[in-house]
Amino acid sequence: MMQDQRAELEWRDGAVPVSTRFDDPYFSLDNGLAETRHVFLDGNDLPARFRNGFHIAELGFGTGLNFLTAWAAWRAAGIEGRLYFTSFEAFPMAQAAMEKALAAFPEVADLAARLVAVGGGSAEFEDATLTVIQGDARETLPKWDGKADAWFLDGFSPAKNPELWGANLMEEVGRHTVPAGTAATYTAAGFVRRGLEAAGFAVTRTPGFGRKRHMTRGVLE
Image (tube, helix red, strand yellow):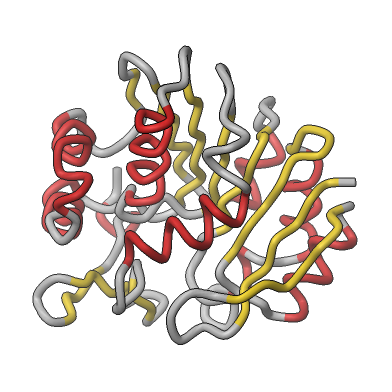
């Protein structure tokens, strides 16, 4: 992989990775793990909807924290069977940087160590299948043959990374969602909500995490 396809980082307070490409942190400066639970688990009514074969898809793998949080919730729920998690990532983070970033979350340390040990990308675990599809999601998502029960829309800020939030990509998200499937995101940007609505989601604005007043949830009609 060419070097310029890797995530370009600087570290805030020595612990929070910030994308220099998009000038945006990878997770909340308040509490990244709590934010992930609030936005992506609660936002998709998880773990209540978990069942064998449940499939989560994500725009923006980043540090892998969302996957680890979902995997930990899956295990805590005691679901029999397998969780599937597919993530679309244009600029994968180097293994060493991922390990450094995830060190901030001791609650998922055991699972994080396993993710880092397999290179921080696609892997088969005993109860979870992780697939990280590298490249521009505008090109890779239309070619994907899967459908998700729940979407984690976690690209960098729409103001700084608008190509990951466009109407055409939201249409692809809808096309790759099962009937009555859900999507959640930390952003409440109007054009994102409108894109999800045009893609067939019934969209609601709900309280956000920390300093973010609102976030967005959607259910495919």
